[in-house]
Length: 61
Image (tube, rainbow, N blue to C red; front, side):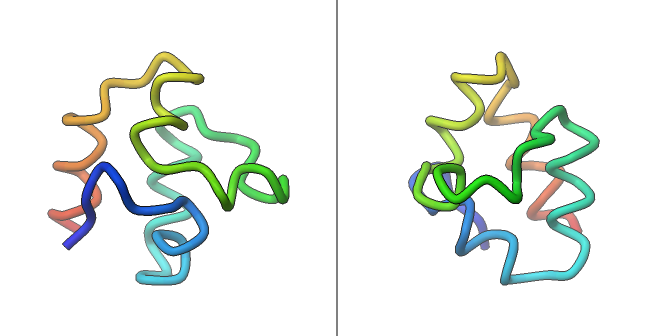
């Protein structure tokens, strides 16, 4: 299960579908080294993405 405080780097390694879901949500900087150290909540705040909506999509996948 994905949580708000998990790092992007951890999340993209959990499930092969997760990078695609994050990209579709507007996080196009997954390859950036700095993004791997951000929490999901921090990354969503930076990109103006609803963290709860994204969490639901990730956890449903």
